[in-house]
Length: 174
Image 1 (tube, one colour):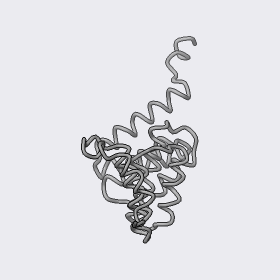
Image 2 (cartoon, helix red, strand yellow):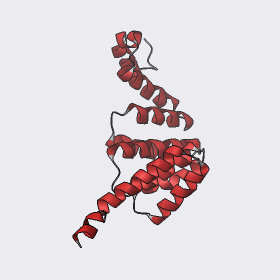
Image 3 (cartoon, one colour):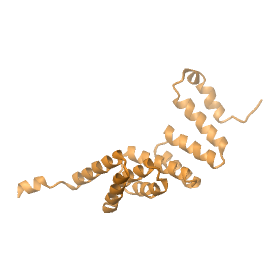
Image 4 (tube, helix red, strand yellow):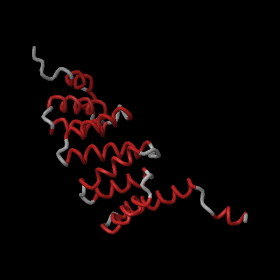
């Protein structure tokens, strides 16, 4: 009886095995892998990590409309690592933008920024969506702040304070 108990994976071990399988399928990235991931996600609808991998493979294959519900499920369920949560916010926000669903993209990216407030990638995708939504002034402001904060270019670094200042004063003239 003890040997059988030692060979039975724990619930956490089983979840980890399923997630590793999902990651392998997503990394392989073929249409057949996508079909298998969808089936795995349907078999385990409460596994956020599997939903995230399923969303990601859809994005990789250019199937953004099919990716969105899996990203939503992944974000609604508990259990995603911070890195995967970040990826899900970025993926869903980008997906909504590509689909022309700008308000949903803005909402998603702003929600992601509440969890990851200084994240340059989320802020950059927010700027792209703001531009698409007709808010180019705010988009440029965000991009200037991201550039000032993250650029390793020596000339940008030399003028970092001025760039950050003008982000909020771009339309002012003497």
